[in-house]
Length: 189
Image 1 (cartoon, helix red, strand yellow):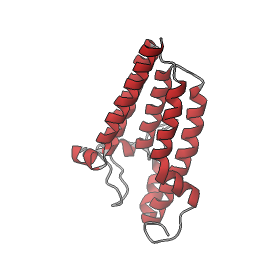
Image 2 (cartoon, one colour):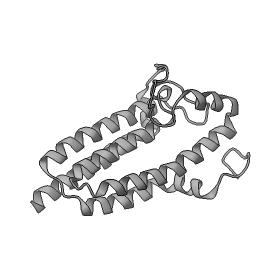
Image 3 (cartoon, helix red, strand yellow):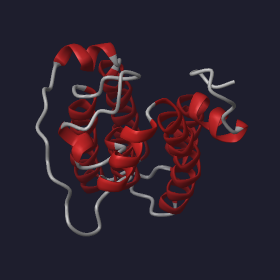
């Protein structure tokens, strides 16, 4: 039974959604093992990672979960700005790692994991808010717009929501991963 009590959601998307953080942590260990960072890759990678985290913080400061569909701030431009932020952060780590062989593995891992996660969440939103969801789905792209941008709606950003959604926990993890990459460069060069 789904969280709403309105019927079952498929098992694989449900599992992917529930365990995506743990799966990402396991893949990060493998990623770090194959990293061969350089000063240039670290600098550019960190800039990209920072941009991804800024997007995540911006999105976290707007989203109100399970009370309707958030359509303001970054949610007026993308239905999944948190996951878009994750993609940018992951891309930044691929760049920082300095090993282009990591890129295809990251792309496949991200595509598989988040296609299941997004599918699960979209089905949940469809069940919970059917009319509002259809309107939103038809007017805002799933990830990034490849054509005309949707209309931006500013909304209200609050740090309270950022803290409530535990986005502040992401910052130490990103910092630790960046330090490990830097140490790998210093110790292995």
